[in-house]
Length: 324
Image (tube, rainbow, N blue to C red; front, side, top):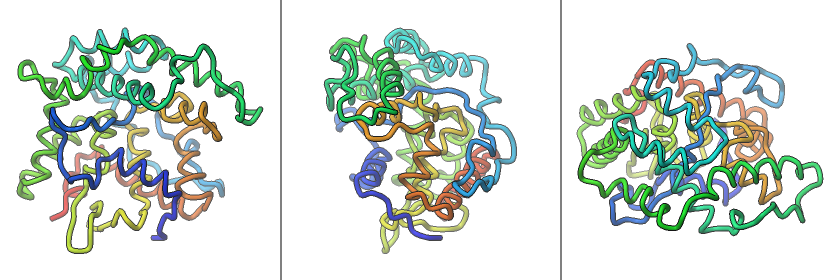
């Protein structure tokens, strides 16, 4: 498979987001918060027409519809709350009351996302986006993206960024959030567990088929290392991360098939649109243009890997993600 020669800044950002190399350890209540992928979710069925390469060639489709359709009623209701483009603070306050279905895990992901925006830009303090320097054709899209992030993030107080953060969630000793518990157990086992225990815990993660869980764990789902370096394992193959393999981009896309917002409403893409220079229609377009560099063959490799991994999650095939 051809190596992905991506922009260094993009690859670095993705690697940091996945918590790849820094200590190769789990987060603790006292460690720096690693901001997970956005908690804005929407069920976006993956159709071949959504993921065509630049050549127009249809990407291989998964074996069946995303597993999200089989979630419990309670979890589907939680996901439905996050489909709304409205007040993010209201969603967090409500979801925090339901750790039994993973509500606090979802809430902390959104809070940490908003906190990261506040820490890096004065965007939320503005009354309107600064369109200077943006291409004229992106002005309308940038305004829509600005309104989305304002609705999601502008209502939080400084204290709430702390009270509802991932750090706060991980420090709780009573009434643990079920999804946070699953993720913590996975990380602990992945650090020092046997192959059998890693398989068992990975299977539990796959069974959630939850887009926020998969987005949070991301590349760590199959991360391992040997004398040659750190690699992502899948279906009998090792993909060394320093070579920029297609599997990294596939992990970026993977939550799309499980319900994560992957259109222009994705907060990552919205922020990129406001700050310039690109307003992408969805993550697939970004993957084609930035991660595959517009190369049709590289993009097809990414899409093929994405569908193979999505199919493995749907079938609960943990062995494909765990290096023996």
